[in-house]
Image 1: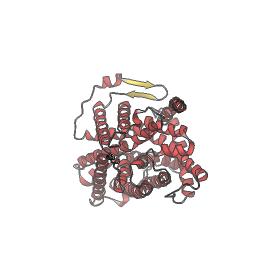
Image 2 (image 1 turned 120 degrees about the vertical axis):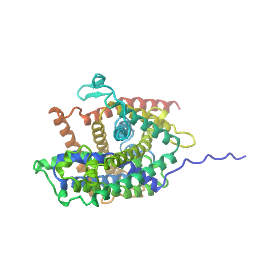
Image 3 (image 1 turned 30 degrees about the horizontal axis):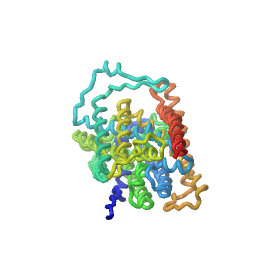
Image 4 (image 1 turned 90 degrees about the horizontal axis):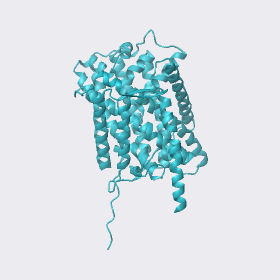
Length: 481
């Protein structure tokens, strides 16, 4: 008698793949970062130009890794690519860094912002200032972490992470549908924000050309632009999430590149439109002083009642971004564990659904620790720098693959190669070096409490003895079999 075959785990299609990218990218950055960038640049045209430049460079990077994703359509994304490019050691360092720093700190930062703006509608309990100051952890050369600051918001953020981890552990279909719905709602709400500002009758073309007397000029302007790009790149981060889920995508050789080529340009258009709307509503000097530029711009055009709309928009956007990042990044840890280079538990899939339930739990716990540890800016800067270090390594590896695997099937090839790759790589190298130098100088001057880039590097290098342990254990096991 024939045994009934277990049905294959469900796969996601093009629309959900696009929503993973759009929903993972559009979080809190576009509602907050333009103000600090405006303060650095002092020029509305320069602000818009920086967002456009960051978008184009993000697109180049996305197209580069679309080629890798089509070549190796397996769950794990950069981990899989680095394994093919440089072997298990480099792949593990990324997988460990992704778990220890990049993916988890990104989700922690976004969840924290979601909780902060939920505070517009909810009153969170807080502890006394004296108790906040007394409970802290000091790490030499890196800074001090106050665990009880904004404790109510932190607890709310942790609940969000645990809830979404549970949803995605139960069903890929449920997580995908939630992602699609939140992506549609947030894009629609952003569209209402942009059109509301433009057609309020109060926006000004003069504001789009405004500058401040203190704006940097010449070489200082270039340096300020590079620093401002940190904020833009943080807002664009997440385009790689769909790569991590390649094993969950139907016909990934076709759908992965197509979803990226549709999603990333759409995000660029949305981001530039939003910044043009901000700049038309507020002179650059006013924008630079804004604590929440989206709310101030909307209030200037549509009245004080816009505050609640903006808070709800940020909560919705960050909630969807947490879901998209969480559902995709756990696949990196799951793939690494399945290869025997990490603890075995995260490598086991949930029977029936095929979801990385254990990896999701591990991520949720570590993300919760990050939420307790510190501020949004520290987490955002740390994961942005660490991500770009590995993006550079992967970009170099793509050149290596063109040489070492010239006949490997490439369902999609990067547009404009090698010129677009060289431009992308040259900028990325300059960006990383410039960011590191800027942080060190700011730290030495007492203007930066924590060297976030070096904290990310330190956590990444902490994986070396862990790799040695698991690689040795795997080798010993293979010899005894």
